[in-house]
Amino acid sequence: MTNETWGEIREQLEKRLGKHNYTTWIEPLKLSVLKNGVAHFEVPTTFFGDWVSRNYGEHIRNHLNAAGAEISRVEFAVGAGAVAAKPMRTAAKPAPRASEKTAARSRLRDDDLPGAPLDARFTFDSFVVGKPNELAHAAARRVAEGGPVTFNPLFLYGGVGLGKTHLMHAIAHELQQRKPDLRVLYLSAEQFMYRFVQSLRDRSVMDFKEMFRSVDVLMVDDVQFIAGKDSTQEEFFHTFNALVDQNKQIVISADRAPGEIKDLEERIKSRLQCGLVVDLHPTDYELRLGILQQKAEFYRDQYKGLVIAPGVLEFLAHRISTNVRVLEGALTRLFAFASLVGREITLDLTQDCLADILRASDRKVTIEEIQRKVAEHYNIRLSDMIGPKRLRNIARPRQVAMYLAKQLTPRSLPEIGRRFGGRDHTTIMHGVRKIEELMATDSQLADDLQLLRRLLQG
Image (cartoon, rainbow, N blue to C red; front, side, top):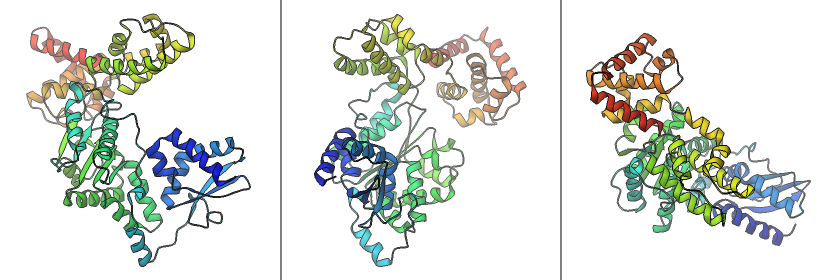
């Protein structure tokens, strides 16, 4: 295979993977040789080769085969001896001399930042703003302006599919456009941990420290995954402090508030709580409808002539209240199905096509969602609801949550008790009966329950 053919394949990969991913991960690759059904590539670093192998190796192999190369696997190695070197996943790297480390750090460039690929779809323009997420959106916008740090870190938390990752990607995209000279690094907590472990194995911890402390904006998604990982937490703590001391912006996301992440060190919880902590609430009907309307406009452009009957989007916004990913996936399936069978998207077609999703959505209210929604409604801490405090302003909302858990979920009394701080099933039974008695005489409580039911069931 000639270099010209590899150049054509690179152009195809750029179209498939996008400009940013291509520039970061494909452009630095150098095709060394094709030998015995194996394509050997030179890469700048061990981590780089491992990342490309796991995320883009299959894409590269498929394109090589399409060009007639007959490749069974793709291997990556550092330096000119790529053919002789072992594959990245088994390569053992000798400890570099001090002079080599200094030279490596002096060559550190933005292209060397081992960030995760950004999704081109996740921008501020494509983010639908509603009451449940307006504060998180406003805070993300402020950070994306790239001005002086006003709150550090920005901590975004919420359940699955509520827009945390979308906002993280949007911030990174906006910063790259507004201030291309900024060194912006976005990655998941799992990737941070993997790279730290890799640096320990390769005996290149100082290079790791230098790289992560040299960024202007550090963005770590799903930080709950480092909980319980002592060495990774230690390194994350020191990286966090080093960047804050330099007045560098940090953006973190998780599926729950810092204080509620089990096995996360207290000193890290304290640091994460010292900035702005923002909760992305579960979507309400209006926000879900807005998301569907935006997505439907996009699909109308793709599927020319496809008609969607009045009331379909409203029906979906009402019935599918679990998370945005499920909602968007349902609409994607609906448009694809209607296009294939050549029919108008009616309510009957929607119910037939999405029967499994609609059934699943009917039973998706969880005890955790009930606890969070009740805590928000009564303005108490979630930790107090499941904790031991017996003050009336905490005990009554706790009983309301117990009652709703019994009414809206299929969970048994002992299981509900375990979710409420390990309480006995008789305590849950007492709480349920108490609320049932009060509903007959307390109109305010009855109104609260009606509102909470409506919020939880979409």
